[in-house]
Amino acid sequence: MTRVAVVVRGLGLDEAERQELRDAAGPGLELRFPAEGENADFGDVVAVIGRICDAELASAPALRWIHLWTAGADYAFTAGLTARPDVTLTASVGNGAIGLAEHAILLLLLLDRGGWHWARAQQEHRWDPAMHGELAGRTLGLVGLGNAGRHLARIARGMGMRLLATRRTPGDAAEVEALYPPGRIAEMLAECDAVVVTAPLTPQTRGMLGEAEFRAMKPTAYYVNVSRGEVADERALERALLEGWIAGAGLDAHHVEPLPSRSPYWDLPNVIVTPHNGSTSRQSRRRSFDTVAGNLRRFAAGEPLLSVVDREAGY
Image (cartoon, rainbow, N blue to C red; front, side, top):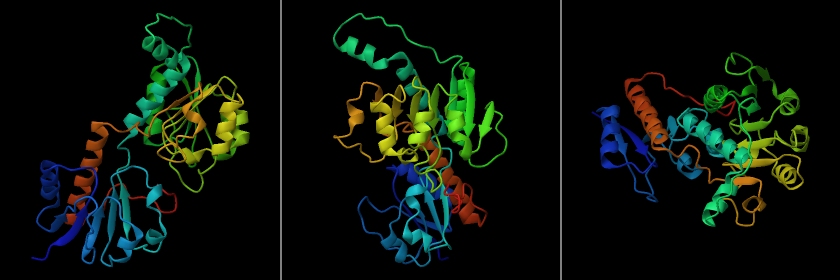
C-alpha cells in the first residue's frame, strides 16, 4: 500500500510524542521528522505540520494541507501560500488562550501594584511597603474577543471588574457588558481603566491603535498586549508612554522580536517587558499537540479538518 507523506517539524518532539503522532496517523500516512535545519524533499509531500517557506511550497506540487503549531496564522500568509489556494491551512486555535489570559492578569496586577517597586526593594534588602490599587471595580476593555479574550473576561469578571470589548464581528458576547464595533473603539477606550489586546494580526487590525486611540484613553489607564505588537502603531505607543497619555504598559508582544536593545521600553519605569512568553506553558504545548493528533486522524480518515484558518479573515 502506498502511504501518503507528511512532514512534521518543530515543537521539539521526543520519540514518545512522535510515536503518539504515528499512532494517530495510522498506517495510511508516512510521517517524516526531518532534523532541524535539514533540507527535506517535498516532491511527494501531501501535508506539513509546522512552518514551510515559499521555496519549499514551490517544490511541493502534491501539498494539500499545512497545520501550524501556533494559534496565530499571520506569519503564514506569504506570497507562496497566497498562490496556493488548493492548500488548506489549519492552526492550533485556542492552544494558548489560558496562558495568555493569565499573563494579561499578571501584567495588570504588576502595573497596578507597582511590582517593580517591590522587586527593587527585595534586591536591596529593603522593607518598603507602598500604597497600591485594586482591579476590582475597574473597567477593562478587550481588543478582541476570541478564545483568549473570552477566557480573560471570565477571570476579570470573577475579580469584580467591569468588562467591555471590541470585535470585528457581532454576535454573542455574554462575557462582557457591551460590545463595540471597530469604528467605535475610541468610545470604548475612553471608559477603560485598562485595555488588553488579544486580537489576531490581520490587515484590519494592523495599526488599529494609533495616536487618536491612545489619546482617547484615560491618563491613569494601563495598556497590555499579549497577542501581536503590530496591532498598535509603534510610534504612537512610544509617545503615549513617554509623554504620559497613559499610565503604563505591559508588553508581551512587540513590533520586532526579540525586542532590540535600543528600544526605550527596556528602561521606561512605567513599562513591563516580557519576551512573548505569555502562552509558553506545558499545557499550551500539549493542547497544540492534541490538536495536531486529532487532525492527523481526520486527515487519514478523509474527514473534514478542524480549526481551518479563514484566508479572508486571517485567522
